[in-house]
Length: 328
Image 1 (cartoon, rainbow, N blue to C red):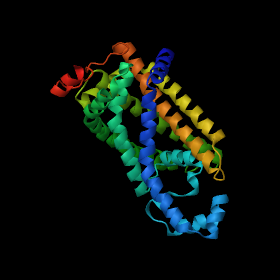
Image 2 (image 1 turned 60 degrees about the horizontal axis):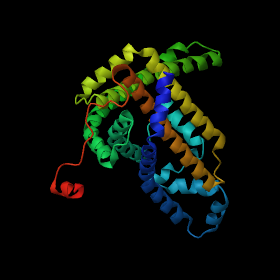
Image 3 (image 1 turned 90 degrees about the vertical axis):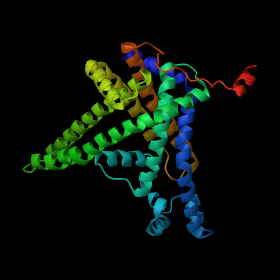
């Protein structure tokens, strides 16, 4: 497990351009709605005295006035987006299965599609652990995007069922039944905490299955995503301690990144510092995501393949008169 974690770090260090590319993809997805929101704020402030006050610091009177008349992406400009509050709001939204606003759902949907497109190229690059070139990287993205889209439909159905049925049954029905006659608030709190832990454990298990399904699909060049999912499940079942321990170690690193952001994130009165620290946090989150993939790939290859093995050959520029002319 430690060896796989260290191997993953090495692969990540040798794939620095993948880190840059994923960060830029995140930035580019967020840029259009950010520009729209900027225009809405600028249009509402104009050249008023409120604009001068807002430039010097937070003006909650103006902020509430803006939210009262805002629509679309403007409704996302809430105090919860400031600093670490955004992390807490996202965590609370997941824990309580609260739906996103329609405009945020659209943005998240676009980000998911971009992630699905890039996932195959990223896993292929991390599995080979060597430079493959831009053509080969995006060729792998194209090959795996449709296969991973099918896998994503299955993942969406599973996660949807968990949040639509299991979550309310655990946190509403079962919790209410258990705490119906409880008069000690602390007991009810720990009961709810325990149910959150059960739901999180199930999510981790499902996440492991889909992680190793993608890895087995790429490394072994599998075309059937059902076959890849079953193969991923077999790998997790045969190596439960190692796969779970590696997952928890990577999760600990993620918690350390979150703790760093909690300590470093400035308030709304320092917008430039907030932007810089926020972008650093995003880069660190990208690194954590890639470390998950790199270390899990290293663990799989150490058990059922070998380092750098990928069944699919690296695509080359097709033979053509133009290619021959360049080669000559």
